[in-house]
Every structure is written in C-alpha cells, then in structure tokens.
Image (cartoon, rainbow, N blue to C red; front, side, top):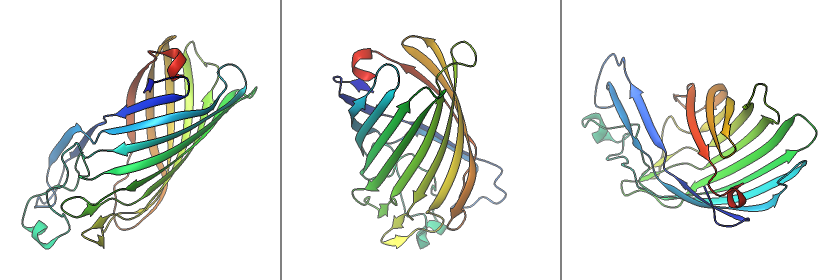
Length: 237
C-alpha cells in the first residue's frame, strides 16, 4: 500500500500460495501426492479515505476498488470434462486465467471503549471467462473486527475477527461446477507486535466455525505471518 496523498492509497498485492496434497490412497489423473506453490494473480487497486480521525476517538471510513489480473498459471483443461478422466490435471491452481474486479468498504470506530470496532465488506465478481471456459462465482464477504487499543504486554496488541463469506458456484463452459459455492463462517485470532513506530509483525491463525456447502469442499485451519512497514506516515495511515 502506497500513500499517493492524504486521501488516496495505491494497493498492489502479489500473494504467494502453497498447496500440499499427500496420503492419497489411489492416485489417478484427478488426485496424486503433489505440491503446488508460487505467486498467485496480481491485483491492483485504489483506496480512498472518506473520513479519517487520526488521533483520539472518531471514525475511519474507506472505499476501495481492485482489479485482479491473470498473471499466474491457471487451469490447462476443464477438470470436470470427460477427457479429464484420462489426462493428469490440477484441481488447485495459482491463477484463474481471467480478470475479476472487487469493491470493498471499511468502517472503523475508536472510542473510550478498550477495543477498536471495525466492519468491512467486499464484493468480487468475474469480468470475463477464461480461454478454456472457467468463470469463478461471485464472492461476498462480511467481516467484524475487534482490536485492543492498549497492549496486554509491551507492544503486543490482540486482534480478533469473524468472517462470513458467501460464494456462488463456479462455472465451467456454462455449467455449474460441482463442489463449489456455499456459505462459510471463520474465526481469526491475531497478534500485532509493534517493533517500532513504523513497522510491525503480525501473526494470525484462522479456523472454520460453520459452513453450508454444495458437495465436498476443503476448508481447514490456516495461518499467516505478515510484516508491515509505514514508509510515508502522512500518506498511508
């Protein structure tokens, strides 16, 4: 994230992904012991600050828009086609092979209450269909945030989040893909460690709390480690 000015941020995201599939009892063209890793699709975005109370009690309101570019390797064949039974292929890929856009909204309130409260939403939709007929379903995400204003230890700030996402089934050559679409509720616990005034280390773990899905889908515990540095304090925060 780069602060263009006091009201506008430029966002660039290049996620690194890694999938590990092991202990497959009967390997075939659909499933095998393997690891897929690399950078996913790059996204570019702009975030505008509608309101920002920089010091003390107040509100922060942000609106952002992003475009996801097909920069990472995607599907080579339709994994649900008849020919997929004979040709080894992937069900997990780094990229989607098509363009998508997302609109996001964030609202934060800081008061005398010991926790900062936040609400964020995102709506993501595909712009086109990939060259081999893949079009991911629309995604709507709603998240509730709780961040403690004061550290429980020196420079350690707890952060909790509930995330509800609703996914429309993917499409393959005009047909709904099996094992896709549904509703998911996940919980996250995060620890923000302030290293100094301009940088912090963020540790997070998330776990499924509830889901209602179509078919059989994977949804497991996940974790992340992030490092945040503020280069231009006047423009980015």
